[in-house]
Image 1 (cartoon, rainbow, N blue to C red):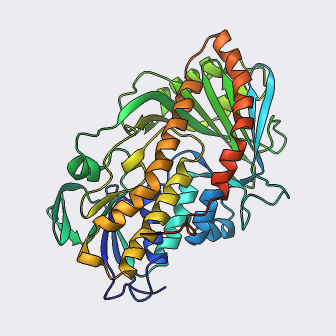
Image 2: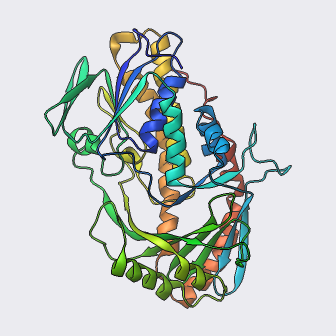
Image 3: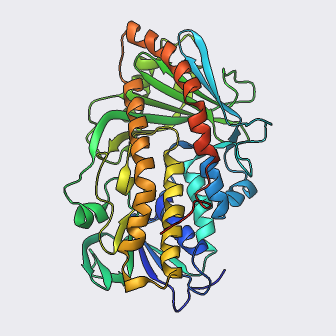
Length: 425
């Protein structure tokens, strides 16, 4: 791949997770010819974190990863499990509905068509890391804690806890919901708040004859939460078991891996909430699950500041919300759309060397979509909150209707390709 160009921007990215890595790839891919940026990524962890649950990459998410060169790596390495359709169940009465990703001819949604992919966060990150490693213009340094951000008219400098520093023309804050970029510079008063919901999850190893009630992925609604059960690899020898449920504040912003007595406590919580299921495999899956994590869901307020003159927040750092089925795809679209706005500004000759122009163009294109997603995410919290039998019964009637009513709206986003959106400014 091409090295950084002498005339390319010098970019700093805080955060070496999916958002930061895909931002680096997008800034590289969409850079004007001869102006490939020099990108330095700084990650607070000693190494990229490849732990976490299993995410659903919707057709629009896979489309963006294909543009960025990461999806072909997932295919080559046989990461994840293709999803034709997602099934929705009431654990007491059976199947309620389906949400299909197959499209009219069974090949997927959009042009070119994509279905969905259930993949562990670790495998997704490994694929994106491999794509980043192939780019000569991108470097990543781990174990760097930022303690201060100093912005000047012509540059921005980040200062590290170890006494070092780094400067660039543009700083991208891709450092998650508890973003140092936001809390130390862009909008310190906008702090994350606990949603009241946490995700307790693990992985159950199963044999080829283990009976399940779903084809690939099932959302299982109960009176006291929602349990996701899904294969996450083509081998189909492991099932992700994740319970999204209303719990008291667990006292940790970032969650933790549960071991020993704590793991059994998490398992017992899941059994307490979903153990009365009439679906035969639910209890055995919870009993088989290992490597438990407890992950509290934090959110930001709907409206907020995303940028200063030389600093831009992307992904959860700007707009973290409860998981609503498209969260990961939204982040990928952020990175591509922002990169295209920045490229348009560079192609115009960097007028006034003023980054406010591409920043404002991006926010004008993006904020309405994010506000709609925020409103959609509220339904997730209410849907998984504890309910009595009457409330749960109402839910079982509402969910199928909601999926039917919103099908066209969802497919519109699945078809969308922000690489083709007209950047008009």
